[in-house]
Image (cartoon, rainbow, N blue to C red; front, top):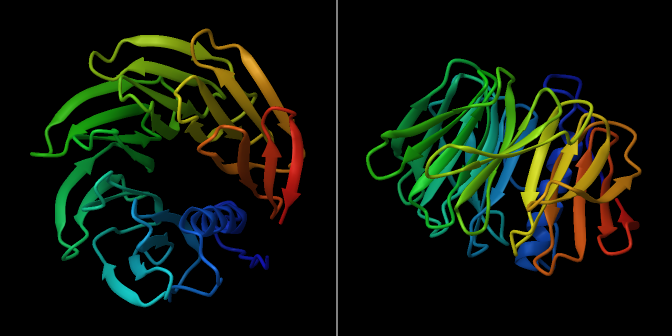
Length: 287
């Protein structure tokens, strides 16, 4: 895999992008790899629709591009953000796309026509977005120290969950939708009841910023990646450390758990994408 080198902010994102693209190719079973998109700046986020027919990319040109898979044919360019688009997520039914931007907003876009469905406001950079499994709620994570839960139907703010005065960089819903996890600038991972906003658990996960979170499909464990370069897997029930994966030499920007829970993908600023055997803790492959 060839990974480009960018000298512009933020934080050498090429490894995270390469990871996301690799995960996308694995998800859709693509037989060919080709260049997709025509952004005028480094790409910071990638998401693939649930049916594998579309890929969305967000970049430092403030645009979001939609392209068809596996052909790579451009579908649409979504414009409206005024700063880097750092997080993207498709709704479970694929009809909506959520975006997180450093312009302090998150947006919901209709995939069919590219129109903005909802606009969500924070008081600082918005780093990440996540849909609830039932597709009724979207969570946004911001450097203003809050996770906010929004009702998709009318854009109403359902809850503001404070992260103890620390910035929030990553967010993920549990597979059953009953809880939401967030990674913070203080290195912690916090889990809340998504309906009531009450704290369920705080995990002192890392020594530095937690950039990435991913639940296993059974919801029993949670994987985190951070600025310290370490990938860790946690037991959700008691917050105990299950496994630790050491090998990256710089920040880890992205993680994903295979559907069977037996392997983990991670991407970092060291310009590598690594595939780990979860049950053995060893590295299977590096790109």
